[in-house]
Length: 90
Image 1 (tube, rainbow, N blue to C red):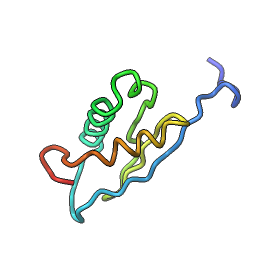
Image 2: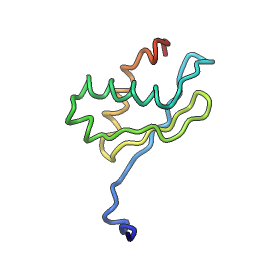
Image 3: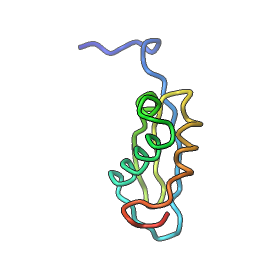
Image 4: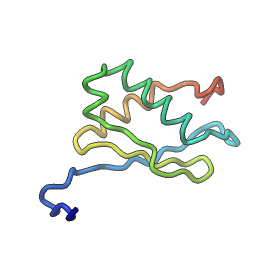
């Protein structure tokens, strides 16, 4: 299987997210489910499928989220609606 040329690749954007309060430990998988639920409840199933969010990496309280280009504003709005993750207030 050959590699796609750059003109045919899907363009992506990345968001750096900081979890507060300090000392809160969140798993990548749990954060992914929280982001997915927030995106679906706010924008609906079709828009959530277009955004295609994913948690790429984590380091302490910082997470890197990936989304499709042009949808980073929608993802950041959905992130602002998340108040709890696994019963932990964030």
